Amino acid sequence: MTLNRRQFITTAAAGAAAVGSAAVHAASESSRDSMLPMKWDEVWDVIVVGSGGAGMAAAIRAADQGSKVLVLERLAFPGGNTQLAQGQMNAADPVRQPRQGIKDSPELHAKQTLAAGDYRGDPERVRVLCENAYGAVTWLESLGMEFRPDVFQMFGGLYPRAHQPVEPKGKGYIQVLLKALKDRNVPIRTNVRVTEIIRETPVSGDVRGVRCETKDGVRWIRARQGVVLAAGGFSANKYLRELHDPRVKNLGTDNLPNQTAGDVMMAAVRVGAYLVGMDFIQSTPGAPAGKKMKIILNTKVAESIYVDKRGNRIVDEGARRDQIRDAVLATPERYAYTVVDNETYQSYNSAVHSSVEEGIRINEAWTAPTIRELAQKMGVDPEGLEKTIDRYNNVLVKNQKDPDFGKAPRNLTKRIEKGPFWACYTGMTVHHTMGGINCNTKAQVLDWQGNVVPRLYAAGEITGGIHGTNRVGGNALLDCMVYGQIAGVNAGSERRA
Image (tube, rainbow, N blue to C red; front, side, top):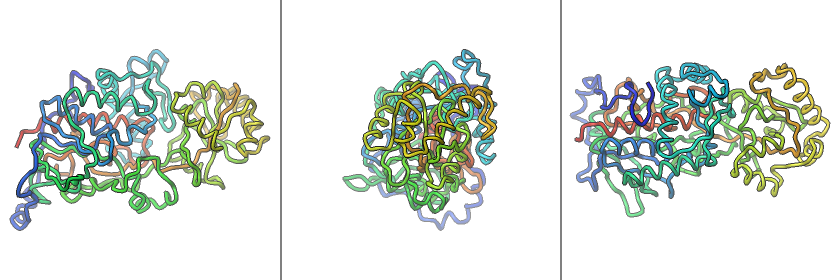
């Protein structure tokens, strides 16, 4: 079954599960101090922490259950890292893919997702993610979202199922979701830092609300039905990311600046949540050390190549993101370049064009009528790059075979031959943290014994256990939209207390 505007999956049926082995804590509960305040400053039905894609999806679906919903955002504006996303979202699509001769299914999507994460993801949560992928597409469309008519294989996506919004990057998602929240009279309060999740005691009972800091002081906000955590990952927290993976030391991040990234996740730990997969941290192309701009010309893996300073190709452009990261960082310079022709460049949206134009101005992107001139501008060996492009076009694409790196034939369909040619730096930046709060298929937060923390839900990058060691490109926004909806429906269906 699929999650769409008319029907919700049975695996995400409303209502929280029982805590389970509550007797384990019964003897100690009497000695625990209550977390409850003397007085609540205000009362809502559902509180959503975070206003990115997952938080907005949760708030919309909770409001659709008849709940009075409040969204709290740490930053000065809504949208989170969703607004910075490249925008592609994976789904096995029964409409678009058959028109393109692409065979796909939720089962294949799930199989590839699990394999790409080295089978460290939870198979049941991955199954729910992929079974509800197309429903997430149609739900967004029902809210006014527009996707392009064709799908493609994006960087790190492993298969042609990426849906591209008409609006560039994450802008389309944010516009549509903000309008849906406005239509439902759901407020978003910005510059609000949630410092504690309030449970009856730290080890037992229901979650009752949150403690937060605002410009006017501390406020205690009650949630009669539940709290949804959607505050994102911890890529922006230099200490945490380097603590869990020292290999990312000296890499920047393409996330929004947020010195408190990860604090909501840790607040959940203090009321019993358990963290999984914290060492699994993903890096993707961005500005090398010492450079200013993140410029993306690699989205279409069938139409771009990565080369090093000697002009040599370094990796299968359709490989897993961690494999591409390792290939880039293995170069002597710890960065590479992406090269495309004019046909591919013109197919990209205005946001890409604007970034490339600015990159050209500051000598971090380049264009030229010939490959030799392009290489000279890049500071790359001209003969090496010419040789690489000639081999790519006249051996690999011509023969539909890549003896060098094993690029799939479906991604060897486009020559790089129509000038002018374009290129940019391809360094590595910390992009996504696959680890976080452990949950079940209902988006309920789980403790270290697998018991539900009552009335506490989580969705999006703050969670762990779905993507395993390596996230498939195009699955992050999908995760936000599928599990955001599940969390919202279930929180909004809780009995009011």
